[in-house]
Length: 70
Image (tube, rainbow, N blue to C red):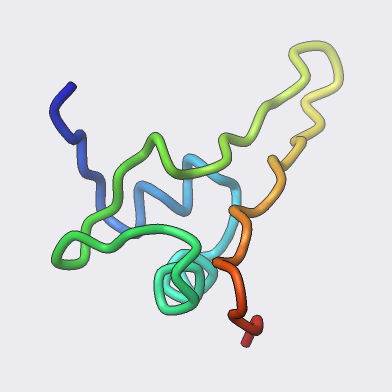
């Protein structure tokens, strides 16, 4: 399956998190940056409850073995 790459802005919307978080995840090795674009399949998707409108964030991608979070 070919990569479907999205911008940091689109990744932020998809995950419900700020763009800075997407950049940090990439710098920590949690997700792969492809020249400033990101594979949406590596990102935790936010969900929105249809009845209440409450947003639920997915778990952040795990850190690679032996890496400390920023």
